[in-house]
Image (cartoon, rainbow, N blue to C red; front, side, top):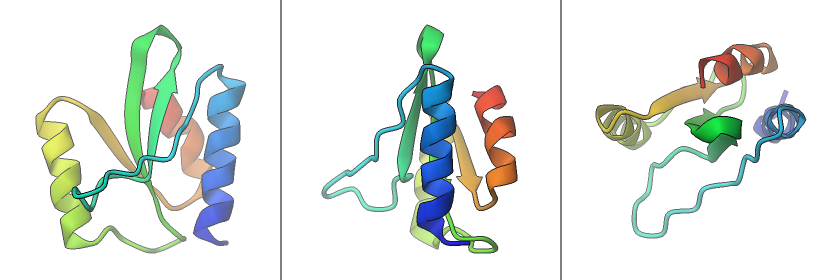
Length: 90
């Protein structure tokens, strides 16, 4: 399964919950997660989408840790079966 397929499933699941899932482009600050998940009642999380079995690059890991130190939830998604759990956690 390709990364784009998993990403589309994430977007659909977020929309079904009444939220939005914009792609995050951060010029000059590489390594940020692919998607911001914004759910009703002010819930927010960040999701790095990968093809099955792929892992984040070292810069991505550093950015994830930065966001986590700031108190945000950051997830790596490489299997559509993880989507429900991620959204529940957010």
